[in-house]
Length: 204
Image (cartoon, rainbow, N blue to C red; front, side, top):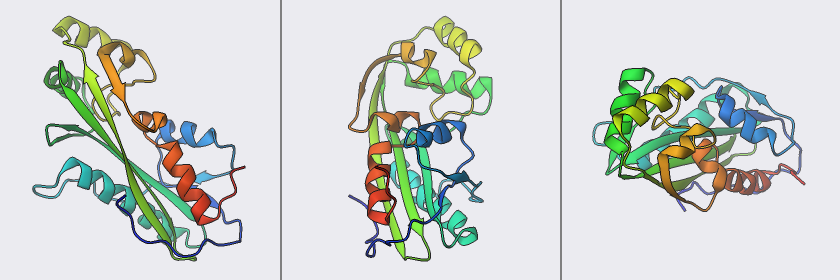
């Protein structure tokens, strides 16, 4: 497990901050029924030259948590990032219809690994941990017409890999293999819960 050794957890129930403005991650964290606020991380998400998708996701998740933690030093901060990995090529958020079409054409009939990383940081306690929840997704051999109909219906232009598996995007897929079901949506809750417990957050 790629992580940074953590210190002994605090006994104090600290504020919880999600370092993301993604509504998908906010909705996932809501499932845990713990109070939290959100903050936008100020992080350049440009990949470094030759940086592998897995390394990119881990670096950005930790960078986002660290950046927000600078503004909330007493809080426990969650950062996350997701990169679609097609044979070592990183596919991020398409942003436009044209880029989404190009992404789905590249991925049809292929196995794509969605590298979803989560980090938890608390400056006051010295806690810092990061982990990766890879999800293997097999795309159907999609026709151009199917791609076009899907994109016009769901407009997933803010999603890495141009698909929302929790919505109509499930119709694009043949198979999903993972050990943390929420990871594909954007925040691996099993790993997040593990880290939060280690950081001193009482979920149950």
